[in-house]
Image (cartoon, helix red, strand yellow):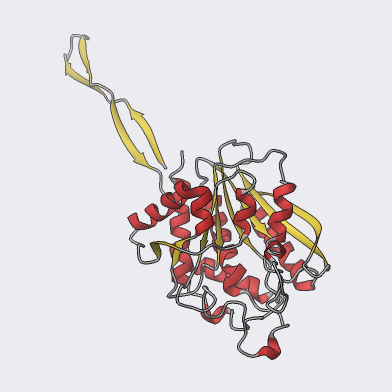
Length: 328
């Protein structure tokens, strides 16, 4: 964000000593550009936020760990100066299970009409259905990268915004029940079984008629050695935002991380936001060389803190912070 200040420089010249008369020459107005500093994003702090989530245990809807994590997330965001809404609801899973969910909405500068939406999902998957050992397929996972990494980045952004707010209003939404989708052993089209929290929010927004200029979803942003391709639905609905973010990453020197190539189509929370009319992109780690298309530990017991890279969290946070703080 650039702030322009007008500096008037008045100089007195030709002072006539002893006669009480003086002539003042007014120098023309000089415009000085002052760049507003972007708060420093801390990769280590983001990493710690990821670790704190994982320490609660499996964040599966309906569990004690899930409730405790929701309480902590809301408190943390409130301490950063946000106006927080806990949107509680009951949704139905693929197998008919009734899931108590909580979407956590943190509003910074809620009075501003020009807004940007930042999102991630905070729940963890109840099934390690891609684990090499089939005996663990019905066991939950830590979800350090798949869930906690995006939330960790957004919590650190909230900490930064407490120091200095951007020019636009910002809504951080932590969606629940994104990862309660049908496991691999369920046949048929199960695409609607994912992203249940954002499905609910998209039809019950926290503000009637809610709108934002655009949205950025973070999902799986903490594994080392895996970059971000331009996800298909992101380009279909919000190509100009993809170019804005990837262009910013290039200017910051992260072309090898934000790769200028098309990626696959991914069912994620951004689809439901786009269907509301808010152009939203998904920054998500994609590995076209893997069998799943994602990082090696995806939906396995190994999605834990051992595979979280603070440097990667820092890169993502820096890019998103620059994009948001450049808005006027």
